[in-house]
Amino acid sequence: MIFLNKDFLRDKIHACFIGKNIGGTIGTPFEGKIGPHDVRGFNSAPGEPLPNDDLDLQLIWLCAVEQNGARMLSPTILSEYWLDAIPPHWNEYGICKANLRNGLLPPLSGHFNNERWRDSNGAWIRSEIWACLCPGLPNVAMKYALMDAMNDHGKGEGTVAEMFTAAMQSLAFFENDIFALLEKALEYIPEESRISRCVRLVMREYKAGTSWLECREKILEETSDMTTFQAPANVSYAVLGLLYGEGDFKKSVILATNCGDDTDCTAATVGATMGIMGGTAAIPEDWRAYIGDRILTVAIDGSFWFQPKSCTELTERILVQLPGMFVSNGYEMEYTSSENVIDTAYPKWYSDNEYNVYDYRRFFERYNDSSPYSNEFIRGSHEAYLVDYMKEPYIRPMGEFKLKITIYNHRRHPLSSKINLLLPDGWTAEYPKNIFVGHKSSEMIPKTEFEIVLHAPEKVDAVNQLAIIFTSSSYPAPYSIPITLLG
Image (cartoon, rainbow, N blue to C red; front, side):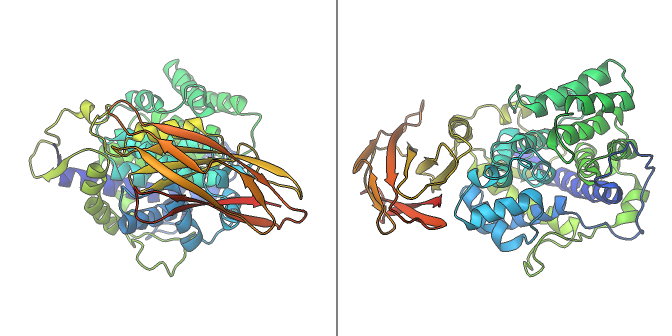
């Protein structure tokens, strides 16, 4: 059992989003300007923050958790909220939603036709909600960040970036040394990723005594093959602000802003992370008073009326969901009024947990084993169905297309299913009519793979919808998985 002091968490979560608003408000007027800048504070009118999509989308993700529960949340459920509640078609947002409307689900929705933006900033700027729902559980925070980011960034660096910031901010609840925090967070992303390389570059240069301006130039050299608004450079600017700011909130936020590029994102992430680490005491009172407590939005549907309207409301609603998030991921947690923040040894929380009912490690294994041209469907806590197109989802008239289907069985008994395909007129297919998957043990999640070969007729539509129908005595009704091929 983990016991957490509720007032301790309340203060840090509230400071996170106040810090997010401060950084976003300072950085927004300089967004997209290369820099370096000489910003020294606010360039907006006092009294309220500037609206920022960095925070907007997180309000919708909170609603998704409230309405579906932590255990049932999936990339596909989040994709429905993309279409229901997020109107803008900016960059990867628009590509993601166009793909979703054509039936291409995550991570395919964030990979297909998204060469320019899959490595960009749209995902890592919204990681705070997952960190605040999973304080001290970086592995779990990263799992939800992955579900989130794959919608509009597929398996690009933009997804790795949100995995990194979610882990970092989750750890920040209980780690006050910024250098140590970054070292720990890097353990949760691939060492060969560009995010990892660029963050390590900043850490090396800071330790070597390089000036922040020289460090910025080295970041530009390292990412010279990329355009602006890309995650490797901008995550590095945020890390630069955290390190070179040396614990001073104002200095950290201003340094990130003065690096230039996607300044609202970098400054907002620095402000949020500093808020988590130090609580409201770390945020200067004059800056808190300047922006107030309100949340103003620009990127979500105003008719989505139950979104939080203030940082205080957002904080309280996160606190309500937090115990369910813990228990849904295999950890028992209760709030305590004890002056001791924790009554359980902190490092044990996020180590591999044999009682973890969701088994987050298997989630990452499935993600890593699949190509960017894939979709995953999770049937409750029982099975996961991975559909891998293995290439761009196009088919020509009289053409052939192969799909690889992998079924992971999380049950304690074997799964036997009959398979049928629902095909458009004139289409034919070759596939096994029955499949068998062994039962789950404490050591492994069994899986079965098979192929489906589709044959198109002389005429194909622009969007061709198919379905795989699974029928089994293990569940009361047939389970269907959609397949989309573009003509």
